Length: 292
Ligand SMILES: [Fe+2]
Image (spheres, helix red, strand yellow):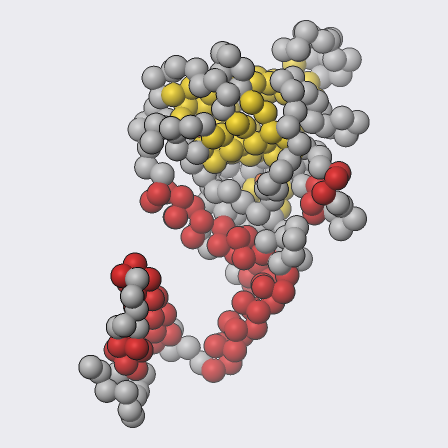
C-alpha cells in the first residue's frame, strides 16, 4: 500500500492508483489505473501550471455546454485529436478485400427516413445532381441481400441539415436509410457533396485557431452498412481529386475509400434512365463487408 500522506508530485500517482485497487470489474480497474498514470505523467511532462490546469477545465466545461440534441462537440474534439480514428483503427482490422472503416463523425442521426431504391434524397436542393449506384457484398463478392444502409452527407455549401439553428427532426435533408435488393444493390439520387470546415464556432474551433490548424475535411458521403453476421461498416466515400484529401482535420481518409465521382454532360443518360438538363455526377461503389 502506497503512502496516502505527505504526497508530492511523484508519490501521489501510486497513492491514487491504490485507491482503485478494490474495483470489482477488472477492465474498469485497468482503464482507471492506466488513465491516472498517463494523466499524471502528462502533467509532470509539461510541468502543468495552475492557470493551464484551469484553462483545461474551462475548455472541457465549455465543450460540454456546447453539446445539444443536435451538436456533439465532444465527438468533434475526439475526432480533431485523432482519438476517434485511433479507436476505429484498432477495433476494425479487416481483410485487405474488405472496405475500410473510418470515423463516425458528429452529424449522424438515428431514425432517418427509409427510402425506396432510386429515391431522390435532395429534392429541390441546389447543387449538381449526383446519382449513386452501389452494391453490398461479402469479401468474396457474394451479394448481401437486405443489408441496411444509412446515408448522410453535407450540402453543396458544406453544411449538414442539423447545423441550421432552425432545423427540426421532421426536416431531414440529405440523409436516408435504404435496403439492398435481391442483387445486394441500392441506388439513390442526391447532390454532389462539398468539402467543408468542421464547426469552428465552439471550443474545438478555438483549439484549431490557436494551433494554426486547418478545419477542412475533403468532400465525402457517409455510409453505415449493417447486415446479420457481418461487422457493421461505418465509412465515408471521398471524392477523388479533392484538395483536402492529404490534410483531413479528423484524420479519416482511407485510400480504398476514395472513388471517382464522374462528371457527365447535360442530357447524357443517368443511371436511372433520365437525361438531366444540367451536368451531373455518377458514383458507383462496392462495399465489401467483413464477416464476424
Ligand atoms: Fe461528414
